[in-house]
Length: 303
Ligand code: CO
Figure 1: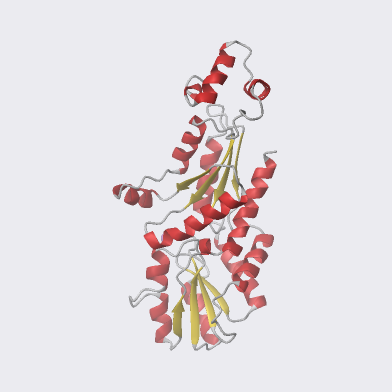
Figure 2 (figure 1 turned 90 degrees about the vertical axis):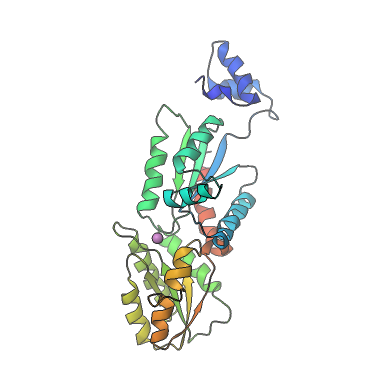
């Protein structure tokens, strides 16, 4: 407890109350302080992304930051990256980004009682599960956050999927004609249930528009599987769009790269003119509304 009270003016004031002996944090704090001085900062939002070291991909995160702040004014918004490789790389450039654990420790020390953790992952994959596991550790009495909850990834429920398909469909590049194919590149998972979201997305898009295809870099549906389906529709042109929050390394190299094994190179060998769309879903406000809705659900559960 001592450690907790060593931060901030309001905390020092509360420490005095605590020292009086009748310590009950919530009731004393709320009754002893007038509404103006009650620390508003009892709830924080922690946005957790995989991370990117590609500077131009960061604009997707900046846009999410802006949208979240606009949707939940007055609630501090913090960030963490799950990828230790990316964090190390950025630290080498003098840019320190917290891990989920570091961010939660800081929030605890700063006196926050409730944390809405929003995963900026697409599927319920391993990366998402790691966030859930870490958050769980912070519910132990040692930390004593009153509430800590992780918002769903982008595509968890069928409701999410319908919202996603609708939002993405409405925001396809305007120059795309109905006969042009759209190829969405998801990340994919080596194992676990995360890939079911991509398979479901492929199915759902197919109901809306037969010329939209979904493949992944590291999971299912595989690129080959997607390509086989794509070729049956004999498109002359395909828009390549990342089904990822940022248009980072995978979009730049695996999707649109000039190497022989990029999706663009392989599809162009089949005489499909490829038009890479170098924007992450984080730049798409309509798609990002899914995260905002998930975050809203978490914050509402705190009331
Ligand atoms: Co990857």
